[in-house]
Length: 259
Image (cartoon, rainbow, N blue to C red; front, top):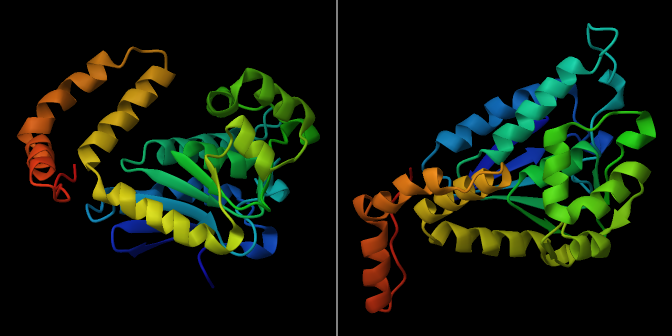
């Protein structure tokens, strides 16, 4: 039996696949709980420069599996355990040390949007549909998930999605900032791979510093305490000397920092 979450690597690009296509890749409580450990492998692998997150079959992820929604031990908050696993999974994806790209086809609903929003970038095909659906089942959306949504689409569109639970198409998702690129279905995988290769050719030190500074700014800080050590690492790591030398010699840089 295929594991519902698995990672493969091709060169510098690792791919995390949500592999439960008969359920449109809906996430069970066990899958949420397993995701941080699944991500730990590629996070610790210095050969991995980019992580792509996708779903098996025609859908990205249709959200949480409702069959286990009320299975918690606390009768007054039966979703407590599931929520904890869900939030830990999102945090592990947000904190992945290299760039992450969600490659989205078909349904990206509920927890699927949480997964996609936890990635750094989102590429989708024109047939994708998106929805944030807690209002359809009476769920209170947690603050960290709400903040991630607001950062992408702004308060008004976040309220539209959260209040209504309505689905929006890929064109609307692109216009509102929920996705970064819409690419024709036939060329989506090739374009994601092309762009992942571009990212893999850039300075991983610059990318790591940028991720940490953006996270600090999003949390309300000014980022100065986060970025200060990175200024010195540009020299100590050799990344900046190599970048400047490569530019002067008109050749691609050979960055070697892996963190």
